[in-house]
Amino acid sequence: MGDSGVLRAALVETLRAKRSLPSPAITEAFAVVPRHLFVPHVSVEDAYRDRWIATKRLPDGDVVSSSSQPEIMAIMLEQLDVRPGQRVLEIGAGTGYNAALLAHLVGPAGRVTTIDIDDDIVAAARTHLDAAGVTGVRVVCADGWAGDADGAPYDRIMLTVGAADISPAWRAQLAPGGRLLLPLSLPSVQASVAFDHRDGSLESVSVRGCIFMRLRGAAARPVRRVAVGPEPAPGVWPRGGHTVDGTAVHTFLQTEGHELPTGLVVPVCDLYDGLVAWLGLHEPTSAWFIAQGTAVATGLVSAFFVAGSDEATSTYGFFEPGGVALLVRAATPPNAADGSISVGVRVHGDAAVGERLRTRTVAWNEAGRPSLLRLRIRVYPIECPYQPQAGEIVLMRPCTRLVLDWPSSSQA
Picture: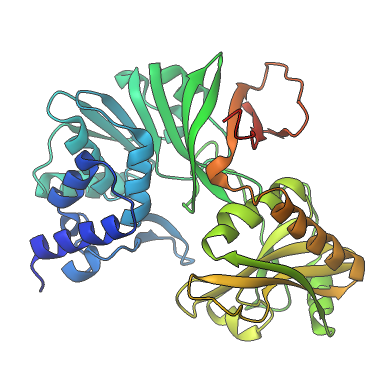
């Protein structure tokens, strides 16, 4: 068994190398809070790797709770901008590790409330916090959509689960001058968004790409998977209003496809946060195409995104009645040491579908390769009228209207 102090220091150095620890206070929190006590089912060595750790699965194998990857935890804590003495509400208690980091940041004068929907997760989080000697954290079993009126108002509200909408309760329980941070589900990606109050709305002050499990409970939003071929099969994940025929997609993919070059060489880090985010916001027939586990062996899904293992492959594309067009890795560019790839499009069926994907991909490049980092998101109550301006994208959710745009540098 490794020395936990040495391993913890090594994790801090890893996060520093990734430039995920600009704040001395957050650096100190990671240096002193013992993660291994919050994930006792794994080795001490695994506890201090910069990886997420599954902690609860449903009978079908789906993971519903985890300890998040330390890198994204550090990024989100930086976005949250927690100060000593503040009151913080965390929705998604998980193992209790993030609550312990928050407790260190607010200090003895502050207080942290963390909520989870499952009583066994809540009980485990309390046990882990006690084992680590963490005080000042209140753990509550409840549906996070309702927040926690008993402890309101809060200076900071943070979600560690993805949500498609913003609860009126969170807005009501946020103190004046407070900040709300959550993994917000957009049409193709999730974005960790920090919101501040500005002129009667919530406006983003920081946006980063992320991937989190979704909020469960009263506001859970069903996600559709369309199987492509007989099980075990890869799946297409279309958005709410788009219909995909899995049998037709499977038939298209049995035909010989042809590739269209885009001429673009793109760093891998710009694919999810940039190109896919752009396509999802502009193209309603675009969707993820993912093979997991034994479905990888079908070979139907090209590894446009590489997860570092052979357990999943994924790409993104257009799924239409006349054909399928998918993003693929073209020939390796001459200087790929920086993690860049050549982006191509493979089309099966109607050539026009592939040309549209190629054209939209090139348009992203011509627009300056906009990314989540530059995206502005404003949130208005659904009952408030709003007239979209040129260049704005409006997403309607049950409780809110999301207005998104990429402001010019002079507006930012």
